[in-house]
Amino acid sequence: MDIQGTENLDTENLNQGNQHLEKPHNNKITNKELSKKEVLFEKSSINLSAPLSKKSKSFVESQSDEDRSIDEYLQEQEAYKNIIMDQVSYPALAEWLGRSNETGYDPDDGYEEADNLVNMMVRAICSRKKYGRICGEEYPREVIKSTLLKANIIHIQNTLMQIDEIDDVQRFESYFISTLFNEVNTYRAKDNHESHWAANAVKRDFGYDI
Image 1 (cartoon, rainbow, N blue to C red):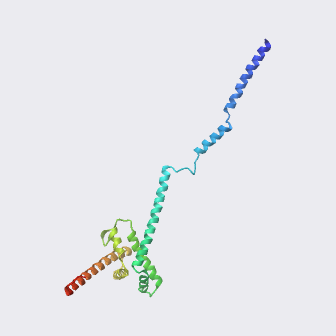
Image 2 (image 1 turned 30 degrees about the horizontal axis):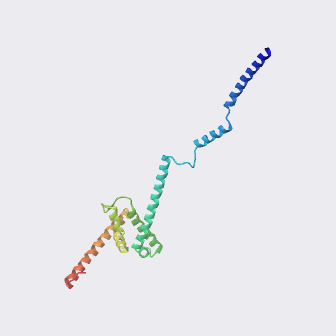
Image 3 (image 1 turned 90 degrees about the vertical axis):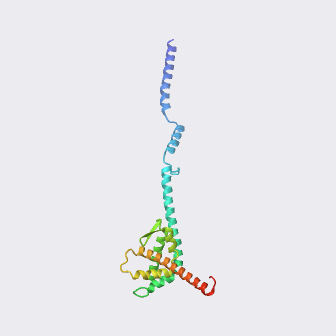
């Protein structure tokens, strides 16, 4: 009986000991559980390849739109610059400006001044303002644009000769654009008047329209 009691006691103690040994084992992280935690940690970490948040995406898109807008504006300026240079006979204008130099003929100065005048016209044409001020009056940008695109070398020469007669011109660029705008419109009006006069003269003298 004592032996059985001892055996039972040892068995119970052994089972209790095993129970105490199992508890620490349950608190340990197995390799499988560790791998799961690593995966969760990686998912919760910053992922550079993950999609941007709405706020970040909006910021990037706004930056892209701004860059795109600047590129389009520069391309627009370049396109109109080429149109104007062709319209005003750029090489001939540069030569005329060089010969008009008070210090004598200087082709480099002529081309530099021609570039400055062309750039002034481009800025006026490509301005993002809806209206522009010409001689104190507001004109729609499209009207200014359309008028300046009709300017040729004769208009520019007449404009510069008019400006030369004015002493101490303030804000040359604004004055040049305003005077050129008026010159183009005046020249066109004069041409139209002469054309009408010629047409009426032919009709009067020869009896048919031209």
